[in-house]
Image (cartoon, rainbow over all chains, first blue to last red; front, side, top):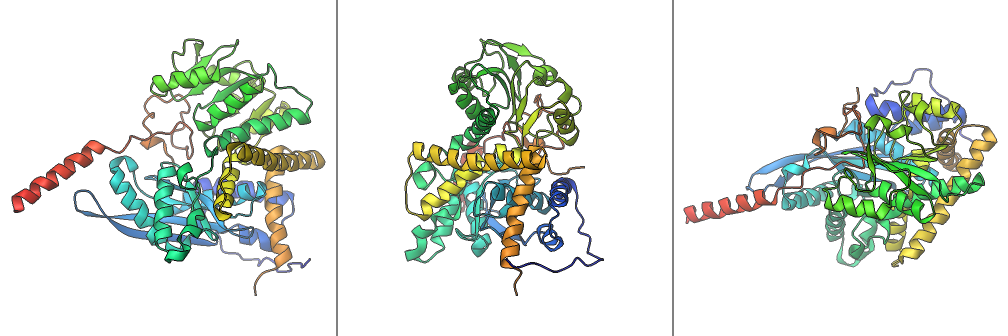
Length: 434
Length: 56
């Protein structure tokens, strides 16, 4: 094994960081200190590999031409092609893309995938454009990115305001730009495509299934049975619904739910699919579900339960409510639902946190299977996909759990350490060119 | 301050109970934007057709 011997210069150029980038860097530096990361590798991982900004024109429905700005940040590819979402949002900028790309590098590394991290998007408000305009914007953006993306180089996926249709347009445009004989061999340039266009069966439930599995694996390790265990879910979107669905199948009982509209509770149990069907006929809202009573929003996290699943958004478990949580385990289905102060309180109270980077990694593992399926010219059945997901996620969970016991650290610290060590190993084995 | 947040464009922002920190959200399962306006597209097309007729 080669050893990197480069030393840090005493004077290094300070890169201005702010907002999200600051938070991601804090997490990285804390884990890097914990594992005593080689200074040269710390330098490499502290900065993004490539940052692509494209300005491109698109003809609008009214005949006028509008110029759009798109981004793609490629953080690191030591373990494989860059992987990460594309979001369409008016606040997308290079700083946000940098932070999210770096976060993807840790996530794919922890999941044991042959990927690096990337992120990007277009600065626009999609509600102001017609479907036809969005299609032309997507296709022109794909053309502008050109060979900066590719099935073995950088593989985008859906994110905020982008979906399987967006990915189908991207794949079609990218494939159309290749020589005729190479077109079908490039279908895996994006993941998250519709099932009929190379997408993966079961991709919709992959993240929620992963959340459920993480809880199940933790229960197995601690000789606990999920039957009759009570759980609460914040967010009844794709992740929250599927996690609840699989937990119910395992015998656990959903007792409270919170969504954007309000909170409901029934300690005798809420039937997951009944609630799901109700929301479909109630403009997506859980409010006034007949088999539950409404709950004050500030009382939601204090609900009597064994398992708490924050599956909506960040900064939900804080110093204000962490003391009230009754669960013995918090499974982070959302990104960053527990803040630093909240986490400290939970850990002091002996409550286990399955960190987001591990808990919600089912989605990116699902993306990897879609990519593999396309790359190998195969079509996998749903049961095969679920079995493969379980195998891969068990592997990641065991690594994090065992590391946390061995080093006497919490699971989040363990997850970051494992993720960064895997990248460090790749650099140490390969050395730095030239 | 975290300048990147998705709440201002979310259709639930006026009544959402999930957070009071609507300047710090970068990912949310409940995020929904208004669907692009197809009616608007049709109106624009109609206007274009009228314009063409005028030119002829």
